[in-house]
Image (tube, rainbow, N blue to C red; front, side):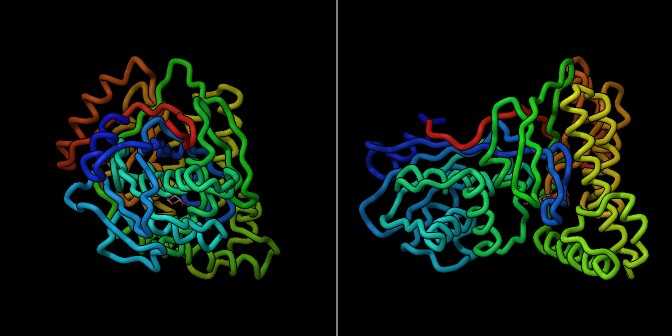
Length: 387
Ligand code: GLA
């Protein structure tokens, strides 16, 4: 990958002298989806798949960005400082948003930079290719300009870039899992307190597969923001009868006691997902620490069902894949991962069943949905780094 980036860089900018190379991972969330904006726990890991960049200061006041994954977009340029989101900037809005946010937070990028990106993450599939570009850009600018920002600082800053510049009201899950990635570990994250701890992802005779439904997420940004609003409304209703700061501060028992305060049926379902998914995440982390992989797997279909029925963020194709997967002998559990509305599933499966699974489930899925699934073996990787 380094070689490919170096060649692209020379081709575009004349030479590759003085160029530095960087990497930031993608992430897969194992448990705890759609609760990072309700103060919940989540359990992701960073991946060995991710985004690479070659970067060099250019002595001008221009940012010149190129993605080897979107050659048809050509070089995308902006003057320092990019002011606001522009549709024609396309994917480059993510890095431009990071430059803008760095400035706002007191880390001014005072000179133009040339950057070539290339990634190994499928886009729009729930493995956080956009947060990967954001964290990568923030990290490399810190290295080039000598800014010192902590892991959580990096996550908060890049989340702010996505919220305010790109306009997606995402929580902290993606950016923090990427910034805090550790090889071989899952990250148990408290999104309310913004703290995290690691647990070794030791799965014994089992493997973690990521299955891409290849149904590209559609309309997800407006739906995503709508879910967030519904959660805020639900919290307001519950706060009329019980004094808590966030939806995930309610235990399942408390939720059952106070749920009649939720005046709309839909709010009851949204809040029920948040509360029970949060409890499942704590149980999953405990199971992982105790090496109880069977228990861990059993929580996955429960989570999928909750995301499907109470939270309504899965979609036809992920539901079909989850159904086929959860029935397949040797699968300990399967669930959608990330924002949903299409995208990827995460499947815990016995290693010796993987090839049969890919063949059988892949074929049935294609027959029933018309989409070809892709399979990747997930390996927990480290955070951003210079190569
Ligand atoms: C997207 C968002 C995250 C999180 C997940 C769902 O990936 O960016 O903040 O809400 O969806 O868990």
